[in-house]
Image 1 (cartoon, helix red, strand yellow):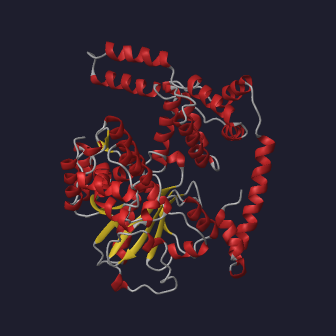
Image 2 (tube, helix red, strand yellow):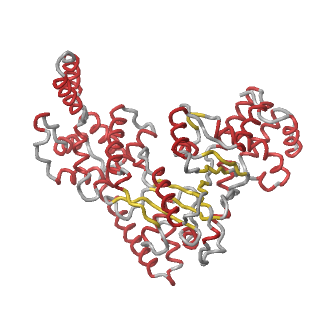
Image 3 (tube, rainbow, N blue to C red):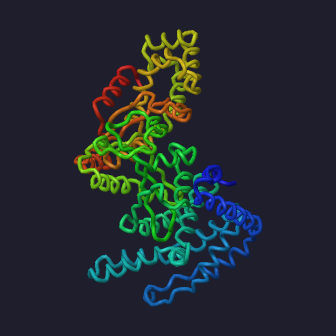
Length: 504
C-alpha cells in the first residue's frame, strides 16, 4: 500500500520534481518489497532453526580468553538477519523462543560461581572481586555476543531495533509470556540504550528544504495530529513553526523521535489554531511576535526503542536551540492531548451506575441539567444518557450541553490527570512523560481539541504542561523520588472541587 504522502506528492508533482521522484521510488520499493515478501516468507521446521542457531550463535568464550577470542565471521550475522527476515510471523515466534531459551545464560555455571562467591567471603578483597567479575561474565547470555556482532554490519542496528519491536509485540499480545523472552527484550533494550545514548544522537531541524524522503517519513510518523497533505506539512515546517528530530549515524535518513513546535505570542490553549491555521504560510517571521514555544506533538518513530529515553532529551536540546535563536524567550509549554480520559470516564460511570453512586460524580444541580438536556429520568436513565453523550460527539453541537458538561468534565479530567495513579505515578502516559521531565501540570483547556479524534479521546479537553526552566530539575526529581505532582492553582482547584463532590 502506498502511503498518503506519496499520493499527495503525485497530485502536486507539477510544481515539484522532487515529489515525482519520491512517487517513483515508492512505487519501485512497494513492488520490490511486495515480491520479496511473497517469494521469501516460508514455513521453517524446528530442525532448520536449530541448525542455523547452532551455526551462528558462538559459544561464550571462557573467562580467561574473553578478550582474546577472534570474532566470528561477519557472514554469520548476515545469515542470521536474512534467515529471520524470511520467516513467517508464527515461525519468528518459534525462532525467538528457541534463541532466548537455548542460547541464553548458562544457569549451572552461574549457580556454581554464586556458591563460590559465598565460600570466598572471608578471603582477601582481590579474590572476592575476581569471583564477582567471573560471576558477572557468566550472566552474559550467549546470544548477546551475536547481537553485538549484528550491530556492526550494514543495517544491523536497524535490524535489531525492528527485532525488539517484534519481541515487544509478542509479549504485549501474550503470544508468549516466557521469562526468557522478557530477558531477551531486556538485553536488547540495554544494548540499544548504549548505542542510542544522547551523546551519539544528532539534532536536526526539518525544513521544507530537507530531503523529500525525510519529509515523507515526518508525515508518516506523525501520531498525535495527522498531517493531511503537502500543504499541511509545509505549514508545520514553515514560518512560526519548528520541527526537530533526533537521528543516528547507524540509521541514516531515519528520524528516531520527532518534535513539532509552534512559536506564538502566548501559550496556546487550542490545537486547531496551530495545525489548521494557514494565514501565515508564506509570511516572514516577526521576532517580536515570538514569546512562547509550544510543543504540540512528539512522536517516537521506532517501536523497538520503547523504554529508551529519547523524547525527554529531545525537548531539552530543543529548548537550548530555541533559547539560542530567541534569547528573549522565557515561556516553554506543551499543548498535550489526554488519551484515555474518555474511556476512563466511561468505566467510572459504569461502575457508579452499577453501585448506585452516580451522585458521587455530579452535583444534584448538574444531574438535573443533564436530565433536562437529554430528556431523561433521574438515576440510571440519566447516567446512561450521559454515557451515551460521552460516547459520541453529538453534545459538541449543542451550546446548552457544552455549558452543562463543562464544569463536571473539567474537574473529572483534572482528577484523572492528577489523582489516578499507576504504581504511584500518573496513570496517563503523556502526563507521566512530562512530569518526569520536570514540567508543571499548568492548565486544562476546555474544547482545546474539537476534532472528532480529540472529542473521542478526551472530550475535547487539552492540557498545558509548563516548563519553568529553573524548576524542572527539582520537579522531575520530586516526582520520580516522591511521586509528587507539581500543579498550578487552576488544576489544584479543579481537583479540590472533584474531591468535594466525590466520595471515591
